[in-house]
Amino acid sequence: MHAPAGAHPDHLPPLPRDRRVPIGCIGAGFIMADCHLPAYRAAGFNVAAIASRRPEAARAVATRHDIPRVHESVTALLDDPGITVVDIAVPPDVQPALIFAAAERPHIRGILAQKPLAGSHALAAAVVRACTAAGQALVVNQNMRHDHAVAACRHLLHAGTLGEPVLATVELRAIPHWMDWQERQGWVTLRIMSIHHLDCLRSWFGDPRRIFTATRPDPRTGTRFTHTDGICTSVLEYDSGLVCTTLEDVWAGPAREGAESDSFVRFRVEGTRGMALGTIGWPGWPVHTPSTLDWTTTNGGWHRPRWPEAWFPDAFVGPMAELLRDLEGTSPATCTGADNLFTMALVDAAYRSAHEHRAVDPREIIGEDAAGRG
Image (spheres, rainbow, N blue to C red):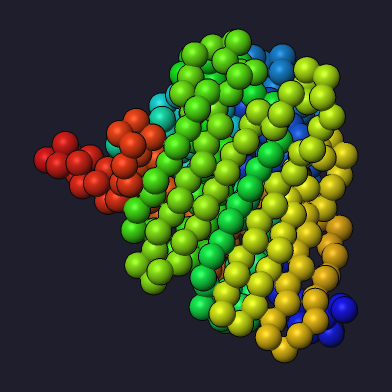
């Protein structure tokens, strides 16, 4: 059964009135070249300049995407008075220094940063304070919030279509393309993959009371470098009684070693008046694989709308659209740096939980970091 006209939930982000705001891009890797820039072109955003630690990479990406200016250094881009918004796509151990530098340029009004915002909640909080003091808008690219099935499910939840939430699960069984820079971080999944799911649950339900996380190394990645957070599973408890679970199985069986593959990302939300089932098309990349959402309510029947958009690259419109709409005064951004601090604390709490084998309230992390500043 298909939903009647007008019953489909909102799944696309609202766009800014003014798309001419000049954006300066920092980074020329996969996320920038294959996700941000194709999405921005489709949305009509104005990418005015690009820079990278490797100027030749920036020039190649500029040619591919018709970017008019290439700066020979990141500093030169930050100093460009014609840039109003900076879009940063660099590893998390490099990103905070660039945000601090951007906060020193008064002509820069807004920053879009990658997740994780930093390598810890404490450092992320310092980044947020710097942007606040500079009067700059900071939005974090938690792009799963803008996946079309995730956004549509959020609409159903906030509209009360599914009733009171009872149980929600997010399950990933897929082998990511790990980045070389992760080896120097010493961590794998919680800050790179799990953070998507934890932030998604926050966007649906708000902040949990506690998290219990268990981890083990990924046998495949463990042959490259030592880490603890390979395969991860978490239980989140809410004051309302809602329970959420996440599973990031980045091993996904010996598919790279000769076995058959069974890769997917799915979510399921059960409420007192309905249930929603979703799939995320990301594991199909580079094949364009749209995400899907099916839902049913106590009125009976299934609603199964289908949309052409996929997470990669289409969802990457959403965070930049949020930032531009915030700057023009149309609507405040939701995935701000300040909001993202709870996601960062939740991830740090997951690490502590796995290490100490107990449930952890993310407010422990927040309180300790605040006390450390005092």
